[in-house]
Amino acid sequence: TIFIIFYLLMGFAWSVGSGAFIAAVTTSMTREYTGRATGIFLSFDAIGWTIGSFVSGFLVDMFGLGIIFFMSFILMSFGAMIFFVGYVEESSGRHIDFSAIKKAFRDAWVFRVKGKDKLLVYLYGIVALLNLGASLYFLAFIIKFYIIVETKTMYGIITGIAGIFGMVTPYLVSRISDSIKKEWLLVYPLAIRIVFMFYLSIYWDKLISIIFWVMPLWGIINLALISLTTDYAIEGYESEAQAIRNTIGYVSSSIGNLIGGLIAIRVNLSENIMAMSKILIIGSSIYFCGLILAIAISLKTLKGHI
Image 1 (cartoon, one colour):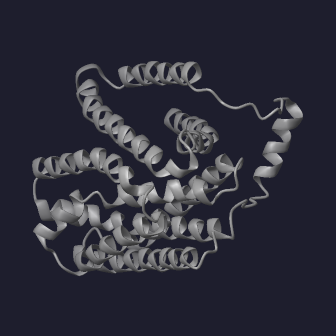
Image 2: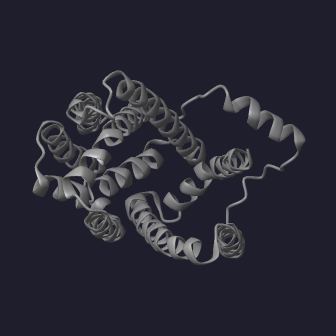
Image 3: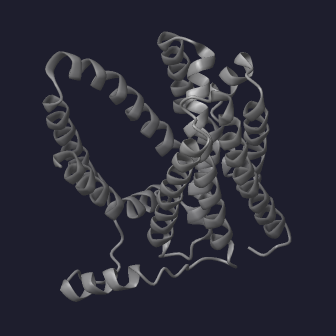
């Protein structure tokens, strides 16, 4: 019960501010450099996650779980203080009062999309399909990959290498992302990833599996999705656009995990490992639909609709 309440409160706390925070990050530079701002954010975020994951394991083994909550509280409080001291926001002229908070809660259920030429709607469709497909696919592929690499040590080493690539790639890609069409920066990594996904849905290829695991394609895709959300949003509504993107992603992932679990039970995945191909193919197919939408956006922007 304690853990349920804890995760409920943590999830609510992050969801309340995540849209505004990501909007602040992507608009911290001018609109022409949303890709660079996003890449820097994703790289440092990956560094924090990697170091935190590594250190937390040792701390739990040595001191127990309690120290983790204490250190997390201290670090998050310190991060909040840095943000309050260092971040300067242009005043909107609006005052926060009870009626404004009530209006915010009421408007949140309307789910209006304020974007350019319906491009945000297409982008949200991509987010939904990718999260749904990925949650289905990796539910099975993580099991398959663990079997392929055979040992916990090898799994840890390969995952560590993937983490290093995940730290570096968003920053490097962000250096060029604002000088090229971000739509194609979304399409090409998606296409490459889908080829790997379909291939590994059928074959048990160790080398290809390792390459797929360490290739930082998702970092590039995520960079494009986040920065395009800000690009497509009407100025002044970036926070709302990012919040909706987050919500769609979380809901789609939850639905994917639920469907994947039901399929796993139906095909008896725990005793029939070869049957995981069914889940992998379904996940890859949904992911492919996201690629089709991404291509549609790219062609739409080429015709001068933005």
